[in-house]
Every structure is written in structure tokens, then in C-alpha cells.
Amino acid sequence: MMKCPCLNCKYRKMDKNCDQCRFCQARIAYADSIDPERMRPPVLMDSPSIKESKSNKSREEKPNVKEQQVSPEDAKKAIETICEGYRVDIKTLMAGSGNRKAMLLPGVAQARKAASKALFGLGMKRKLIAEYLNISVSSVAKHLKADDEAPPPPPKDPQQIVTEVCEKNEVTPEIAFNPNGLVDVRTVIIATLRKEHKMPLETINRITNLSTATISKYIRIAKDQGIL
Image (cartoon, rainbow, N blue to C red; front, top):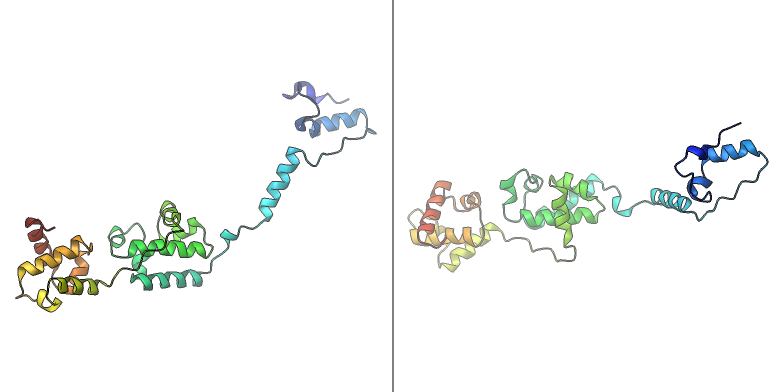
């Protein structure tokens, strides 16, 4: 004859109508050995264990719309559209947080935020967006946090910015950056590009054809004069 499993059970002092005892296979087998013809109590379909099991099964079978697969073509098209709108090179955008220099270029931060939202809108999960854009998941979450905010306008073309700054100083870019031009005017213009427009030296070099060393010289002059 089988030994009663309840004797050494940690639930031995509990009411035998609890779920742990009612559904205990060892206890059921012992009861069957004593009285094979007995009638087992019906399983209550609203018991916590049954409810939990059904709930878990429903969650497993129910697909999550936000976790749908995004085709590489759709993702690439979305990124290309963002880069075109923000005048950012796609390689620069995809350089990720590992390239600090690229992250500081005009429009890159705004483009990365817009790209995160665009990919999320297609159904891509945050982790995959982070891997796709080579940034951290926390950065993606930050970009997606203000979904109700209007996206920032694309930055102006650097060439247009230089032209406007020159016009405010009543000169043309050709005159301002002519080797024989006025040093004071050129100093003010470069200081404005750096201070108000955060323009990198490489961009100023590309537009003005001034060497990086020459631009640095004017920046030092601007700092000495207290205008930068």
C-alpha cells in the first residue's frame, strides 16, 4: 500500500481544497490506490492556476502588431528620405554613436531622431532600431519619447548660411574670403558661423576654401577680441 504523500508535504497543514492539494498528482494517485472507484472532484475552470494558464496561452498566440517584420527595402527607403530632407549623408547618419565627430555635424541629431521615429512607425522594435542606426536603445527611447512633438525643420544649407552672414556684414562671400579682403570682416563672419550656427571647421573650409589653419587663426583673433 502506498504511503500517504501528505505526511511529509509542506502543505500538510493546509486545507485540502486549496489548489496545491487538489491538483497534487501524488495525492491523487494515493487516493486512487485506496479507492479506485472514487469520483474525482471537478476541475474548477475559474481557479487561479487555470486562469493564469489560459492568459499565458492567449498572450503567446496573440501577435504583437508593433513587432512585425520590416523589410530592408522599406527601412532603407525611409532612411534615404530622412537624409534627403535633412541634407545629411546616409553614411554619416549610420555612423552611429561611435563616431562623435559625425554626430556633431549640422542636422545629424535631428535626422537621427526623425529616422528613429520613421522606423518605429514602420513597426520596427526599439532594439532593432538601435542596431540599425548603430546607437544605444536608450538613445532610441529618447528620440521616441516626444512622439507628439512636431519634428524640427531641416537645417539650412551651409552655403546659404554663409551667404546670409556675409550679406548681413554687407559683403559677398567672394569679397569676404578673398586673400586680399578685410581681416576684420572675415573674423566677424567666421566668429558668427561658429558661435551662432555651430558650423564645424571642415564645413567652413569646404565652402570658403580657407585652410583649417587659417580658419583657426581667425577664431583665435575673434576670441582675443571677445566676439567669440
